[in-house]
Structures are given as C-alpha cells and as structure tokens.
Length: 56
Image (cartoon, rainbow, N blue to C red; front, top):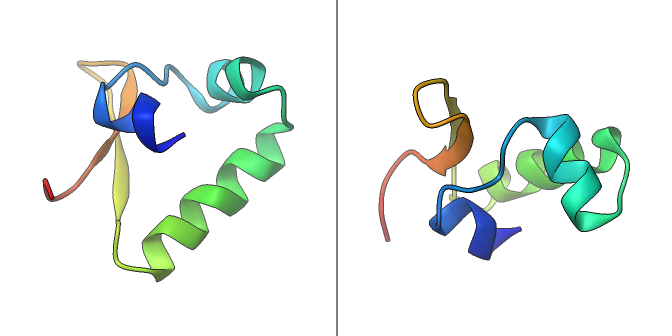
C-alpha cells in the first residue's frame, strides 16, 4: 500500500482493495492506521489516488 500511495497510483478505495486482494473495509482500516502513526493520507480527486498529506 505504501508503494502505491507514494507512486500515487492507488485509485479509489475499491480499486485499491482489488489491487491488494483485500476488502474495502481493510483499506480504510489500513489508512486509519497510517494516520495514527503520523502518515496521514488524503484522496486527491485530480490524481484519483490516495496521497500522503506531507512528503517524507
């Protein structure tokens, strides 16, 4: 997931779930976990991808 977010190629939550072979609920849980450890994400509608709010 981190690699896909960094390359800005996640797609929607549904598409990301498909790419990772997990449920959409798991995608949201992972995103919540990333947020809790300081790697906040947001969905960029122009890129149609989840992106990190702040680059590392």
